[in-house]
Amino acid sequence: MLDSQSSPDPEFLKNLLQPLLEDFQYWFNRSRTLLESETIEFLTTEQQAGLLVRVQQAQQEVATAQMLVNLTEGQVGLDTAILMPWHHLVTECWQVGMRYRTQKADRR
Image 1 (tube, rainbow, N blue to C red):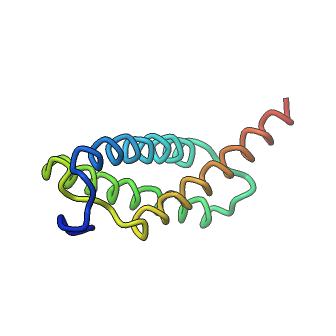
Image 2: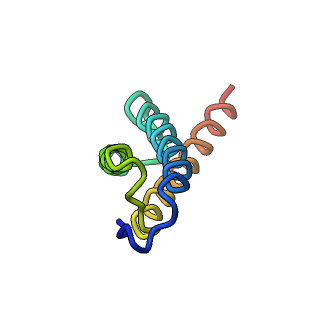
């Protein structure tokens, strides 16, 4: 988190962070649904379960960040060191999802 003295305008942070955190939740929810409902053949059972655990953990972290931003009315920012692992995880989930959909389409 950033301290209030070095953070930008609270309204700017709120307008920037809320949609970003909502996007993370959207993509993590989609990924979680896929991982919970489908067998991803190119992942081992352990890999799929591990990815699901990481997605669930990230969802909890994002929810906590959303709560802090809302409770402080945008007075709290997030360091990029917090955001980057979520971004990497979303990217990993996108890659899994694209590969899954491509393989599924090829079988038709």
